[in-house]
Image (cartoon, rainbow, N blue to C red; front, side):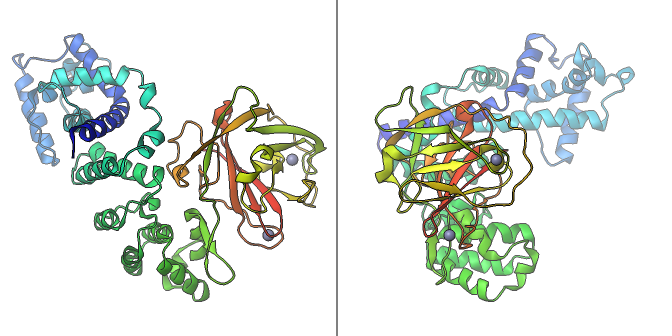
Length: 486
Ligand SMILES: [Zn+2]
Ligand SMILES: [Zn+2]
């Protein structure tokens, strides 16, 4: 491993660690304020040594012994700060109700939080002071500093790693999984999720075997294309599982292996329901779309996504390859009488579209928020609303603002949207949908099959909530649009 690789990987992980440190901002600012106000006892004051001893005993009895004198003395100020007592240690005096178990619990809680962030920082940040109070001040500075814009696009960073660099990242991630400190462990899982979702190649069976032995089954897409033997091992665990949550997670993991054995087993289960299926709300085969596929009529793997995935990014003016979005039409929605909208006009990139996909995706934005809206389209680009029972007119309050986005022609890994909330703008064509709730692939109203995902519009890109998802049925030439928000 050469120096450049090591440095690049260290910087990458450091930027991720700083992001986690920002989530401890509140705790860290309380610390610096308490230090600056001169409220932390130096230990020689009457009664303080006794309180430190009592807190030490409490921590030891609850299985988290603490020896750091600064953290212990700092923690003594927590109950007083929470009650607005000045100086805070006064709250531990008997006429301030003393150092009760409840107050020891409050003090211990702050020690836990600070130890979490310290263990993460000590593991990954170079130049951190060995003095606890100095180190916490350094971390507070990081927590309030604005996020580094250049390193904000995590997808680009992970995608552009060389094979050697990504190997180094996964090796560090696996070391993190051995660490009992919560944020270090979480960083390990986060790094592996990032590699699984933001790169074309899967994590591989060796890493998946380790995840399985550690009982890590979420995100299920960590097990993408994990291979036949790993799929078999997950199936063995499924046979032994006896609670609904474990069965849920394992079914999803097996689905994500996208393996022959998974296809075979889901086919068997659709013919004969397994004993554990009674614990589920839906048949096992309904778990498959979450992994981007389903079984076709012959019981074979049928992809519900296109592996040809591109992110769609904003363009100031309509260039030759611009895709227009949210174009209002004269025709009214038969359900609510609000204007029909072209959610996507893919005219400029027809060659990129999957076979038989609609060039223009029509929908009612308003009705799509409640249930999928279906439109039949024809090859001459004419279209018609699917006859449906008329619903009551609704008040239309969604602001339609036409916009242009231009297609970024660099391929995006098709599973990028599995890492929800990671992308500033998840607007994309192809790949998996970024579900903000459970996966909701609509059924084609004509043939009854699951519809294929085409594209999604992330409304946060236009200061609105939620995501619109577009689907189509290539055999029936039916399109559907639905919507989710957090
Ligand atoms: Zn409508
Ligand atoms: Zn159909």
